[in-house]
Image (spheres, helix red, strand yellow):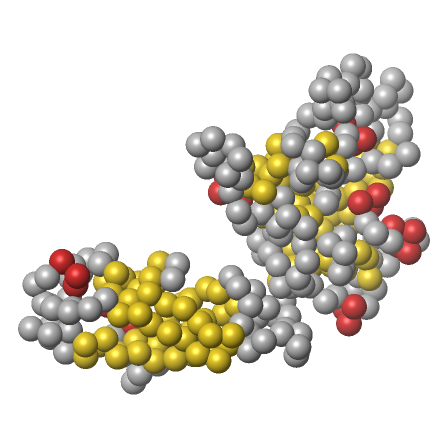
Length: 293
């Protein structure tokens, strides 16, 4: 009998948690990892529930399902008298709680969730040093005693082995758990992934001092790329020459906007932008933004 255990060890701020909906045709248990990047548009007025998507890329920053929810049977009923919530499996359409796997988040995680739990049956507090969990190519947590196998951006250091007291009438059964801490690494992209070859900036026409188009928050350019793999994120890159005016602007999604203060000097502003795609490909480019009197 499997026991699905995943709970936070330390108190975390609310923004690190995410509600996710079990995908259609699937089920979910605590300790499973998913992406949660897109709000569920099938829920009217929704601002909090995300679509749970399968982890398909080693650069993904996923969430992990927690034991914070209640099991529902296939016919919609709640289980009657089930004392062991570690056996709960959530069905399609249910909304459950998860936590985003930011650096140094600490969890207690049951070994039954692992894709290769039998490989670590002899691991205890005396020999857990230099052992890790990572996300394999199927989106499953996997144990390894070789860091060379840790191919995902997000991975876990195993810090302790514990035994979690289970429910039941006697309360004398225990499930083996791991205390783990989240770490991140830089993962090289696949050489076969397309490179970003150019960043385009579609400038707002007729930028002029005193006009609304150079006021604080005004969009002065919209960015796009050629090549790469969507989605793409943009950020200013420090360069004292070609990025001399970065500090006067902000990037909001694909838009470059005027910063906190309106532009007051008629000149050509120099910006330096870095684009990063979902495969980790990076490209930098400088832009001249002319503003007239």
